[in-house]
Length: 333
Ligand SMILES: Cc1cc2nc3c(=O)[nH]c(=O)nc-3n(C[C@H](O)[C@H](O)[C@H](O)COP(=O)(O)O)c2cc1C
Image (cartoon, rainbow, N blue to C red; front, side, top):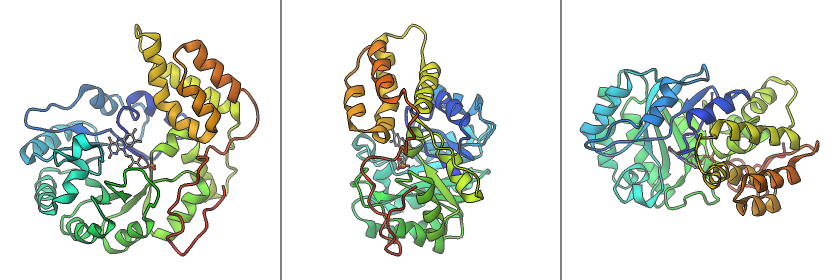
């Protein structure tokens, strides 16, 4: 199973529409609905469920720690066409974790226990959890695993970093393999999946049911199909510069908001090119970060991408953490 990771302000209805045209994942996640005492599901996130253009299932993610509010919101969202309700136990933003929500809950296993119990009872469709491996230390995963085993959740996604680690190197795929071995529910692996060859190796070595991919899919929308092609022995699509340029044009056309200021539109596109640029190279990234006008945006994109040379679209700096399992080398795709 291949899933698109929930990404705030990225995995919108518009982005889902674009990525679906490239093959897309088997299942989508919404960015998190913020849940508190008097919250109502955000309209723009609800749109990605009610207007889901992909033909594939979408999972609704919640963040919060107020049990009655979580239960109320889960019941409400179940009335919409969602494949599952998911609880966020990983958000590392200080504004979130200081309120003891998202990744902040990982410091309070007893509270997680109560939330899982209440949500499991309230959710009559599949109930899933997306977690990091601890708040301060991977050793905390020892206390978290029994909680995920105790409550009959339907799927666990593990982003194998701690909250304080944010996005730094050192992804603990070995702990994901442990979760896959110990839990009865299926486990999805998440964190730094950037190529089909790496995906195949991780699937084989960890025993997980599937992969959840975030930044790698923004950078390389062909990635899900490349993973499927490698698994089935089909030819892998190798995008060239002009393919990536066409993808950026598609994002632009889908993200355009009528009446919005030019600088705001360019700013919105940088949300995507900041990730895409990591797979193109440092000079492109440097230049695209500095543009403010539409003309300059396309001048820089054309300068670097108007060609027929193949692109690997992997980050220029290889992610670490691949050597943990069986001492394997980072595979080239
Ligand atoms: C811009 C951005 C927004 C994110 N928003 C969410 C979110 O709303 N909910 C969530 O569970 N994780 C969120 N994440 C984390 C991703 O789902 C994922 O766990 C993380 O990026 C690691 O996967 P990757 O290496 O494949 O990107 C976000 C990540 C990014 C980069």
